[in-house]
Length: 173
Image (tube, rainbow, N blue to C red; front, side):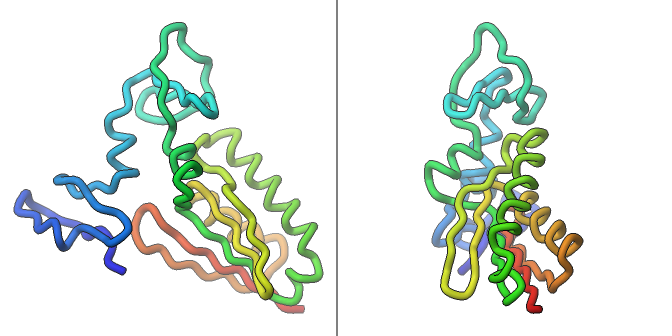
């Protein structure tokens, strides 16, 4: 899979920048990146109520007259396009799965209170692992670090670009 590459001049070869999954505009931005660039000040997400102000999405009080649109997190959820994946594995995880999922839920709630674009999307239980998807890369990374700090185990991650990360946490007992 080919991901967005960095560029330095206006002589951009679009074929080098585009991926099969994420086409880029003439500035080299993915659709997700571009969608945030053209949001008007005071726009409110019609789904979650987040407010776009001073260049970022917040949970501030809504203005009287406001434009409505979907925030990037709600767009990711609607399009089922997670930015983060946390893959949890190991015998220890299998034995303590409910407690660890509850722990992750608390991390998610804490992150969401300050960062409206960082949300849990889904928890998929597989035969040998569990995959947690998130709307932002920071929540996936925070989940991995918190698990390693609280329970030990092995933590690895792969980040393909600024908008996609996979975090692997494994602990066997």
